[in-house]
Image 1 (cartoon, helix red, strand yellow):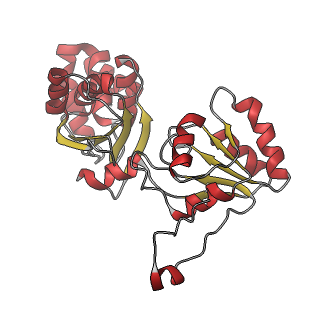
Image 2: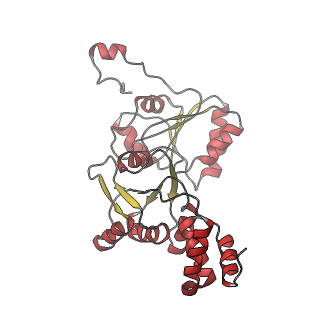
Length: 299
């Protein structure tokens, strides 16, 4: 195999850490999300010294391995064959093998298969360790300009608007930046639903991270929705980030006042639903309060 440290010369080379083959157990290895140079030396060591490597798509994994002159035993592990393949992996772990799990790009288990394998390996008492590296959600967050002290990664939003709005309602009160993965064809509609449910929050579309045509587009959710509706679906992998809203607990008097203003226009059910989406409060509680206000009660 090619030495990962071969391009380091002189005194620095003599002082650099020696290659470290992976230890026996399940090694969860991060791979580049686009730029093949975003591979860690430790990841190269693990791939070179593995008894077997499991990848979501062996064709994609093969391109990475070929780029670095590596040829480990490569096997497929994905959602469709997981139940059948997991026993073989657990048997390899029981035999003391060095097993590496990678995804198509980035860190395994982040919107990729692998959770059940990790859980089963832990339950069986096998060592499980993560070798960190590239991650689209962290790269997007770091360069977004949105608050990064608290964030919530929610994977992909549902493809249909109704389910998507329900999911966004559940996330409305999260006290931090929201991070999603999204597809180009759904981006404009998702941003429109975000505006409708969460309000005109700051948003960032991070596209093709680490690749040649990397792009960050920032602005209010409504403006970004209009841009992509007019320009059409963008190409490439997309990380969508939404800034936090006002997460202070709503005052009961303010809630009553807003419900009272909405009931004549939208009815009890509509008023409760709209306020639930905006505040993240339980719709059933708001419905009960709205009904009491309509009936003239004050309790």
